[in-house]
Each structure stands twice: as C-alpha cells, then as structure tokens.
Image 1 (cartoon, rainbow, N blue to C red):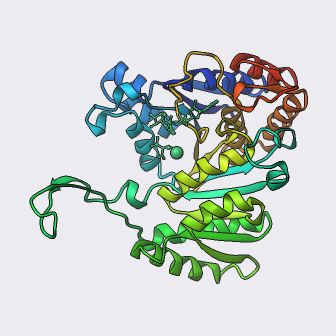
Image 2: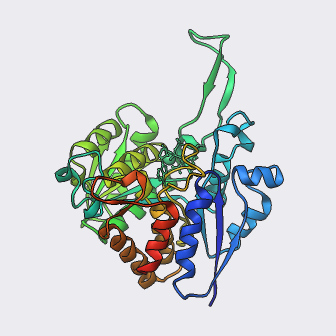
Length: 357
Ligand SMILES: NC(=O)c1ccc[n+]([C@@H]2O[C@H](COP(=O)([O-])OP(=O)(O)OC[C@H]3O[C@@H](n4cnc5c(N)ncnc54)[C@H](O)[C@@H]3O)[C@@H](O)[C@H]2O)c1
Ligand SMILES: CC(C)[C@H](C(=O)O)[C@@H](O)C(=O)O
Ligand SMILES: [Mg+2]
C-alpha cells in the first residue's frame, strides 16, 4: 500500500536538507506519496500561523512526517504563539510524540572530525532517549508577572513550571528499557534529583519501572555530571534517558562526539510508533542559502522513518549503508571537513548518497 509522508521542510537550511532526503526516498523505488506543507516561519508567511491547520491535519493523516527545521532570528520578537518554534512543539504535543530517540553514532571515518580525541569517540554508539511532551517545556503556569512576595516583591519576574506526571515518566522509562534490551542492556537515567522535586520523582519512578526489567542494568547520574562524563568517557553509556530540557541540551552536546550536529538524526514517536523524523539541529540561519549544510542527519532521519514507522528496515539499511559509503569515499560537507578529504556542497553530498544507494 502507498505510504503517505508529510514533508514539512520549514525554514533556513530546512528546505535544502529536506530536498536531499526526498531525493533519496524517491530513489528507493517504493511508492510513497509525498505531500509538502509550510511550517514554522514559512507557515507564518503563508497563512499567519507557524502551524497552519492544514499542515497539522496533513501531519495527523500521514503515515509519517519528515521535518526539516524551523526558526529564524527575524521572528524572535513575535508573540510567542506565533514564533516558528511553536510549530514543532505543537506537532509533538498534538501528535503525542513523547519519545524522542537521538542516536549518537560515530562513523569510523569521522573519528578525526570530532573535536575530541579519536580514542575517546571511536566506536561510539549511544542512544539518547529524550522525553518530548512534558517537563518545563509544557508545564503551566508560565509567563511574566509581578513578583507576589519575597525579596523581589513588586518587581516583574519570569517563571515556568517544571512538572512530570507519573504516567509520563513510566512510559518513557519503558521505551528506554525496551530499547536497551535490544542493545547493551544498560540504561542511565539522567536527573537533578539532588535539587529538583520533579527529578527526584522521575528517579523514583525509573527505579520502579526498572524492576520490570531485571536483565537491564539501571544507573542514575546527575545532569551536570552527565554533561562532563559525555566528554570525558562517552562510551561508558548505552541508553541515556532523560527529561525534555536536559535531553535537548545533552543531545546537542553528544552530537559533537559524532563529528557534527549535522550527523545527528532523530525519531519522535507516539505509543504506536507513528512518528516525526527530523535532524536534531535547527534551521542554521547563519549558513542558510549557502548550499553548505550537511544533509546527512536528515537523510539518516528518513532512514529512521523507514525503520520505525513504515516497516521498511531493508530500505533503511540501504540508506545507512550509502551514507557510510560516501564517507568512505572521503566526501565531506564543510562541518565535517578535514585535510585530505573532499569538500562537497549539500547537493553534491545528496547526489553522492543517491549514486551509491
Ligand atoms: N527542531 C527544530 O526545528 C530546531 C532545532 C534547534 C533549533 N531550532 C531553531 O533554529 C534556529 C537556529 O538555532 P541555533 O543556531 O541555536 O541552532 P542550529 O542547530 O540551527 O545551529 C547551531 C550551529 O550548528 C550549525 N549547524 C546546524 N545544522 C547544521 C548542518 N546540517 N550542517 C552544518 N552545520 C549545521 C549552524 O550553522 C550553527 O553554527 C533558532 O530559531 C532555533 O530556535 C529549531
Ligand atoms: C526548536 C526547539 C523548540 C527544539 C527543542 O528545544 O526541542 C530544538 O532545540 C530541538 O532540539 O528539537
Ligand atoms: Mg535542541
């Protein structure tokens, strides 16, 4: 049966990198129905809202969503509900995409592209599982108000609410333990239980969930230490599970272990493995339009889409093998370039993947 894929390219480098992933999907010889729709700043320009109703409807109807990136500095002064970032937050919330998988894998050819010593990163294969629809990102109330009491009474204050319901922690815990079962059977839950009520609660629930998986080793680490350990000895980790905000930060950090944030794909899944697939990076306004962005994170996100939502593991393998091959050929976009390799543009990298598919 024809699979319908919603293609939401978005802003900045979004359209450039998504175009390459679409070419790869089209070259697989499968019958996909790809439907494009504006989102983010592009959605705002098209219809006055970053997540136009028609775009949300398409995303809900489709078998999977391929997403580029949203955001541009020029929208930073809009009221928050109109800012491009609300589109991706709204999609995650509306589609119930609570489980964000961000695999940080070092392709051996890129050991020298990482800013860390090759021996620290070589062989790296960790999976960051970020809870994606809770935490301080979505907690209410939030806003700016007059400080009601205390030493700053009468001044304005900005505030947000960090929170997790028990079922939210449980379900992401199960995702992590089940993922670990298919890997090296280790889960490290990252929290800030020494300071935050929300994360003591998180830790307590993780321990309870862990009892259902006696074959998986559960450890706990404070997020500040985890940030340090990721740089010191990242290969100690197998699956890292954490909340929305810590996961946002740690996954960007982990991306540099793989050479570049342009290499880090992601899958955002609901309870039935319906998903949205996007690179972990943003719209990179600093390089947009220059044709130099790395499309591999997006192409690898398309591979994750085939594997997790479309039940086409063999096609996912084909794409991942093709990416490996172009790296072996020495082709590099600017972000992963090192002396002795061949610098290529976004288009050339996409075309190279196609040619070895
Ligand atoms: N899911 C998303 O759509 C998403 C994710 C992160 C940031 N954003 C938005 O993107 C905008 C820019 O944010 P930022 O600059 O903090 O983060 P960013 O990830 O867009 O860029 C950070 C740095 O990494 C580089 N970079 C990112 N992707 C790259 C690629 N594929 N190839 C080569 N280099 C790449 C950029 O050039 C920049 O120097 C903001 O509006 C932000 O809100 C969106
Ligand atoms: C753009 C922003 C809302 C988003 C996030 O914070 O989740 C981004 O940084 C990401 O990692 O996907
Ligand atoms: Mg982020």
